Image (cartoon, rainbow, N blue to C red):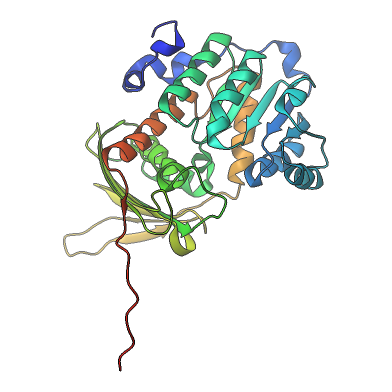
Amino acid sequence: MSSKPSALKPSALKTSALKPSALKPPALKTAASERLLHIGVIGAGVMGSNHGRVLAGLPGVRLIGIADPLPGHRARAAEMTGCRTFGTFDELLDEGVDAVTIAAPTHLHCELALACIARGVHVLVEKPIASTVDEGCQIVTAARRAGLTLMVGHVERFNPAVAAIKQAIKGEDILSIAITRVGPFPPRMSNVGVVIDLAVHDIDLIRWFTESEIVDVQPQLSCAVAEREDIALLQFRTASGVLAHINTNWLTPFKARNVTVATRGKYVMGDLLTRQVTECFGFQPDGSYSMRHLPVGHDEPLRAELIAFVDAVRSGKAPAVGGAEGVASLEIATRCLQDQPPVASPVQTPRRAAG
């Protein structure tokens, strides 16, 4: 990898240059691990406010405050967490934070992350890591050079149902993965479509489940009611030969989050909302098989994610989802958009009533 950020090309994601092991930050000094970790939150929208809520209750953590330019957001965050709020992220950093979580709009991720890293602050940035692969690479390079922890908020990895699925397929010969992630149109969404907002979660899960990189992308996108794609049917093949499919949209009146994994020895079904995971196994020539419900934990995914971030900062160990992994998933999502520009659905003219 070149020492110049501009020389870090997206193609580097397919090599070992950005593997998490290469980005392991040095261990923190003992003194740092013996005091409260001072953490701030940048962005006081729904996700940022929840970051503040969880951090305010974590042992060994002092929530310094939440920064957001919107007074309404700051008021809500203050009411939810009881912490101080700031109109700019510079004011927050001036308070002397050790780490921040960034839950601002995606197009601000790069600017904010680089500014925090330049101040020697560890960073957890919400998914996707940045608006573009190049910006994501800049963040990864800056954190590596500074010896700081960089973690990406792919929170589904911390969903207890996902953890149960991961455990169930451990050591299995995976054949296919199918994921459905649908729901109603979110009014807050304006600068991205379903691929970046939703499917990037599942791209990350496919890579994590298979422990293999995606090498083939076959997207089908459509714009039904939004300016950006609001329907996506995405097919993938991993380097290990696994076929995967993602069905995602903003047209379903209810939320659904389902994962199925077929291996040579079992079939695992998981509902990520109800957190029910079922395993089918013992297939017989006559078509019969056995079925069982797997034990699933009850931890809040966001709390588990933030605990993992705090542990990585304190220990200096590689985070659960490093910056390189966040960039790799963003690259696949970007390929989906580049390989198949969204097609507008044909305008339907109202039918004339009979008679």
